[in-house]
Each structure stands twice: as C-alpha cells, then as structure tokens.
Figure 1 (tube, one colour):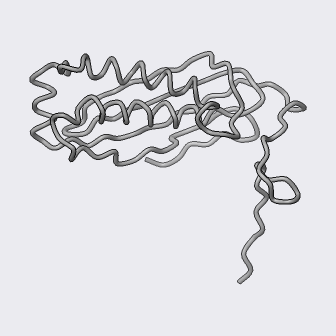
Figure 2 (cartoon, one colour; figure 1 turned 135 degrees about the vertical axis):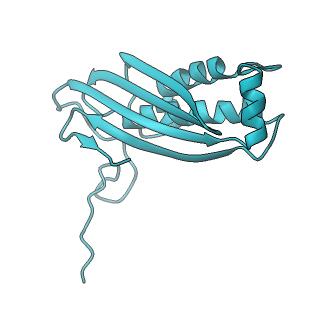
Figure 3 (cartoon, helix red, strand yellow; figure 1 turned 30 degrees about the vertical axis):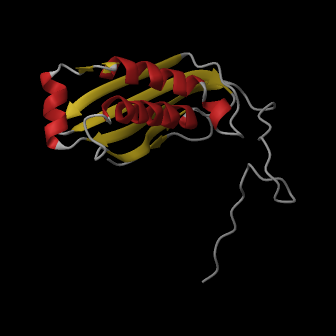
Length: 162
C-alpha cells in the first residue's frame, strides 16, 4: 500500500521551514476552541476547594486565567512559524470536574489565517500555570491532554468528537 504524499505548508520546495504567505488570502472571521485537562491528586483537589482556590502564591484560577490569555496573545513569539495575530477575543473558562480542572480556551479574530495554535497555547499556558501555582501541594499533578475541540473560518470548519 502506497503512503499518500503530504504537502506541508510550512516547508518550501527544498524542505526548508518557512512562514506561510497568507497575504493573498481573504480575511474571514476565525474561531478556535481548545481544551486542556489537569488532574490533581484527590487530596490536592480537596485542599484547593477548601481554600477556595486561593493559595499562598495567589488566586489560582484567576492567575491561570490571565496566564492563558497572555499565552494566546504571545503564540507567535513562542511558536516560530506562527503569524502574529490581533486577537479580538480570548475567553478562558476553568471548571473543576471531580479531581480534574477542565480549561476551555476560545479565541477569535478577523484575519487570513486560523487561530487554532492560539487556542491550544492559551489552554496549555493556563494548564502549566495551574501546575506551577499548585506544585507546592504535590508534584503528582498531571496535565493529561491538550486538544483542539473545534475551529471555524478559513477553508473548512471542524468539530472533533469528545
């Protein structure tokens, strides 16, 4: 069976990395939703709830929320071939589901390239911040998954199964 050939937009004809030229593309409204999950040991989740998510380092959920927004806005500084985007929205929601923090990051802009990486980065940075804020309680905290949930705009829309 022959493997289908893939065209990677971030490689030029000589297989060198490049930033994709989006100058000729029509600007459209773009949106992406990503999610990260952070699993706490049960005793840590209980401590967090009992402390109303305020630890000596600060208000855990508020700091993670702000860090996620900052991360989404800084994506092009962190991922070399991403275009800098003027995000028009970045919503971070962090909910506890049992011993797990579920972080949803939804970003949007009107532009010529997608915002999936910004949503993934926002969710990731919020998850890393939760770990950092809580590591004094335990190093057994696990960032379980970071994934794209959906995207809209551009060539295609995408809704991934849960």
